[in-house]
Image (cartoon, rainbow over all chains, first blue to last red; front, side, top):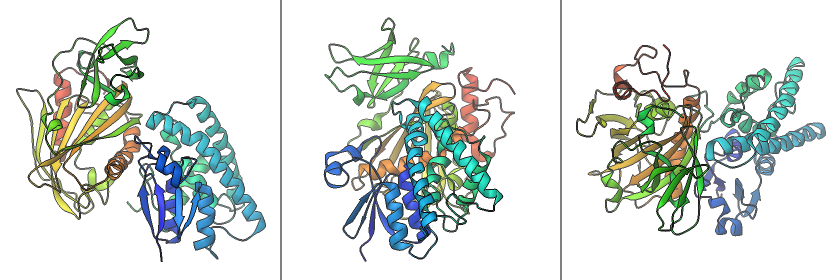
Length: 212
Length: 285
């Protein structure tokens, strides 16, 4: 079977969420590292021309099928390789919830991830505004998780982990690297602990795997 | 601004010289010791460094592919790095990564051998191979540089070019409080060393930009793989550095207790203390 190819950058939370789901599903793949920083290879002519005209990673290639956007890739992988599993269940309300959280994951990219790019890689942007946006999202997520815990729900979309959790996890766990402490979000911190203890969990630089 | 002559009169890195492409009118600003420094080139193409208003000129030089600025009076020339021009060596800038930590902590962590199996598991070490054999540390009387030699550690994947586990041999050299380099076993040319340079730009006392430069004998690996390896390692250190308390480095020997394997760190802290280092140093006990 042709291997899945992932255009990848090790320090990217959006690439990491794809690597994480591939591991959780037990699907093998090969990485094609992109020199995102300092080389800006994702903005190079060959990448824009033949991989992703939007100049973003991750991009997934699977037997001739090319897909961009981390959230879309999670939906594809869970549908293609996780059919019958819990990650993207065929239930209307759960799918509604999942889609809502996938869009929240994009909002986290625009805020928490942007603040991290500012602090870590020197991106010039309005970091105060990004941090304020991230805090507003974290408040919402923390309230949601705290309410859910009362009825025994420990995950974002339903009673078990789904791609909603893998989509939102990276940039929440990495938020402190953008000057966004998580001290005020206890339910979020408990949820981070649960995600980290999923069977077959892998970490990334900045997110430790408990097996270490 | 700090009055500590150890940093004020030292050459400090402010970025890749390529950011001021020769002949171009490119310019950029850099943060150094809490100040804003403007970098540009004059009519002859020489680098120029001024304060924000353009009124005060600072000493600046272009060397080892970086720009180095001294905000006070340069005490001595920049350190020597003869390997930079050694034929066959590949020079690769891995980018500057921001760390919300003291630059002295960043350097000290780089010198720490014992953490490698725990933080860089499966790459630079792995349990149970955690023993650090006794190695030598000395301060070179001529250059006032710290040298740690004969550091040996079993490493599952010491570099991109390593095909399997190997017993890596390291030597560390500390040239300045914020500049260090590591000489390590070169998998491609056993008679030579690969070199990893860490030049820290102290943005202020508790935030830093870590510039990493590789000087490798490696004709096989792609730039992107070498950069990804180095950034992975640094990305693993970053959250640990950012969670150290106290944030500034204690150098009086009582607040944090070292072990024998920390001999380089002990030497570094003593060396800083002997020069009366105050910038980015923990004040209380």
